Image (tube, rainbow, N blue to C red; front, side):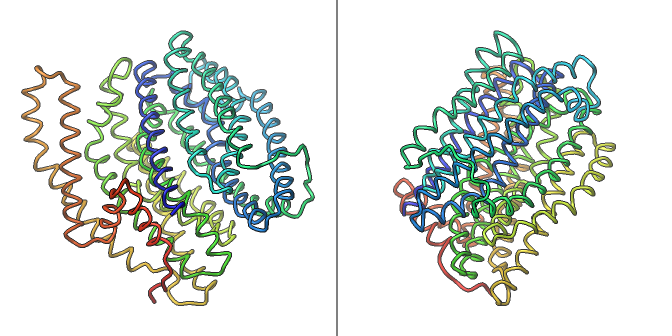
Length: 543
């Protein structure tokens, strides 16, 4: 019951953070547009974001939580505190050296990442990079404290820190950004990290964790973390080479291409940063416990039911983002320095990215299955094997389709990563549990067919009603205003398409519809309990 409530609360908090993030993006677009200034700012954030979102957010979580949780389960709080303190002290020392190195080497790094920039844009990017880099140290602390609270089964406060970040960023945009331009904005971004640390620090103390000024690198648990995290870090380095190559290719395309990709990615990540992240955050400890207790059928069922829940939510959102990308971008961003051309480019990128909306969080969830089994190397080899061909594909697609080609290349990569990971995890569970089937894929395929029919019905509804509605709203545009007419169109089409989807999959007796209805019942508590029971109930995978 407690875990189910946590899932709902985390999703609600992350949804609030995503809404605030959309507001901050709107303010950024109106203030700075999608030209070279934003290209420089987005590139300056690129290096700290690599460390924050990918290295710390993925690798550290999957290694730290299972090991530290073991100390809590065995009631070895003192030893666990010493191990955790050693980890954070080592991380702070390491990343302090990284920050200093990046600040000194910023000109060379910027020249490598964006070789297509003109000298003025390159100099501005170097300056902004040096300003924002210290935020990495705050990010290390925030990430560590968040994982620590997760280990204590506290999920809401680490998620709430995202709301704090977005609020501080909005304040930075409307104050420092408008007073001192993009340089002031960079200073504001650096200060947001300090605000997050100050927010979480009292909560960690209240959870019962006692910091120790120790550095016991020879402790067996610390050494085990080092062994387990090594393949994850290598995987992330290889994966980030893809993003570096993407940035290099985009710097040689039309002016504003990097900014357009960034705006589109933020919209694309909106649904994945709410429901998908909340689901994965809460399911991972469950799968880790099932793996530790050798409950292979239960682990397989938990994972597949998580995939079914992702598919149910992400598929219709993907359709809406592809078909209605232009009005979405227009309503959110097209004002001030963000003109119609920038909206057209961003909408095109969003359409191609959204084709892979399900594959990205699904790949995350499958990887959590590997990590629950303490298998850190299989995701590494998948990433290594696909990265170089994906970069080559991006070069070819960008030459033909421009920035849209890079977006399509990203979708192809994520889809292949998900499919290959799913197939390999299925084989591993067969070997691990000595059972046929490995994963109960038939329920996933059945749900996929029903969801596909619902999505087709959505597309037909939009194509049938959309032109007529546009004609009606065109006559009202002068009376209501262009923005109001666009909002009315977007809301009406999204609502009609959503109702159509729910009716179709409901008529097909899709199990997850009943689960979602239960979530809404009595403020979601009873439904959430049912969702949790369904996700974690023991059952034998189909043979």
